[in-house]
Structure formats: structure tokens, C-alpha cells
Length: 246
Image (cartoon, rainbow, N blue to C red; front, side, top):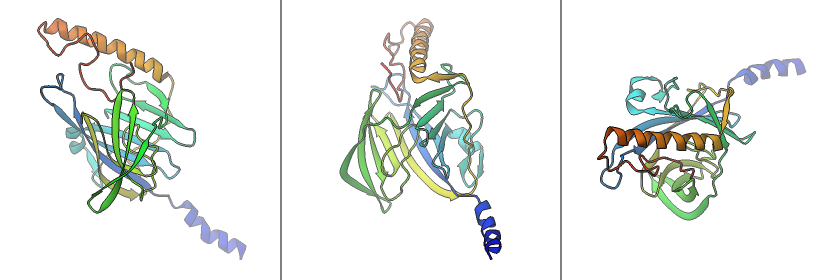
């Protein structure tokens, strides 16, 4: 009888567990002079939450996204993805790649969800879903998030997470970065795999130094190309960044 029970249970054990695929849209204002105009770049991203809690987030430009939809209206991670991020709650680790000249083909290690969230009692209803407000200041920006306590996934787009519910919308105080959730599906196949980072792995401190050096060099090149460039500044403000390390 015990043998029969094991045989009946075996197919259930082999059945793959579901993956949550959460899609986001990002409007990114990357205008050189954000005080006079806004130049919006729209990006699409998927957050794959695996059964063991690990997750993979990646995003690409809208045109790339639309050109390469392969299954269930979700973007498959490609080698030319603009950014992807690995989160591992079990080991409290986060690794990311951003495919810029700063750290091309290198992984950067960062803290997992280092946010001091201020959770408010304020709520808003969107499409019949009640969202709760939270805010945090992180690396030079004030972010406001709206999360859904009814969806017990403490995650969100980019590096965001750590709230008692899934982040549906998050933006900075100037709306230079606005992430919006556009869909959630549960299926057996992930659209991105969790790849163990390969060395060399940069620390976030080293990455900050390289970013600062590259931005200053880029500003010098802008000034050399156009001496009248009003947006070119000796300060690092030539475009808006999600993170300011200084």
C-alpha cells in the first residue's frame, strides 16, 4: 500500500511549480534639460518570480519589446536587454547588469531591498483593486509606491521591493521615472532564467566610482562637441538617473 502511495505521489512531485510573470511599463524622462522639456523613453520589463522566491527582472526599449514578443504577450530576455536584475531573498543578495559603458558584461553586487519604507494608511482604488501607499528616500530620490497587500509578493520592478505586497506603481517626486504594472500571469515556463553571476563581480561602491568617472568624461565630450551646450554642466546632471551615489 505504501509503495502504491509513493507511485501515485511521484507524478505530483515531478509537476513543475508555477512562475509568476509580472509585466511593467516604465516612462523614463531622459531629457538633458528637464526644466524646459521632457523626452520620454518608454521601456517594457518583466519580473519573473520563481517558486523558491528568487526573481529575475529585465527591461528593454518598447520597440525591441514589440519586435520580439514570443509567448503569452511577454518579453523574453535577450542578450541586448537594457538591464537585468537577480534577487535572492534566501541569501539576501541582489546582482544586476545595466549594459552601459560603465560596467559592460560585468555583474554588480548590491544590497537586497535596502529601503526604509514609510507605510501610510492612504489607499487608492484602481480597476477595483485597493492599493496602499508607501514612500522611501533612496540614493538621492524620494519614491512613492502603491502596493497591493492582497498579493503577497514582496517584490517590484527594478531593485524595488520589501513591502508587504506587490508593487503596482512607483515613481519619483518629479515623475522622471514612473513604473506601472501592466499584467500578471502565472504559468509553468519562465521567460528568463536565474543565472548565477560570474566573476568579476563589482561592488556597488566600485560601480559608483566608475559611473562618476564616466559621466564626467561624457560631459567633457559634450562640451567639446558643442561649446554652447547649456545643458552641459560640470555637475553630474546631464541626464536623470535612478540613483545618485554622491
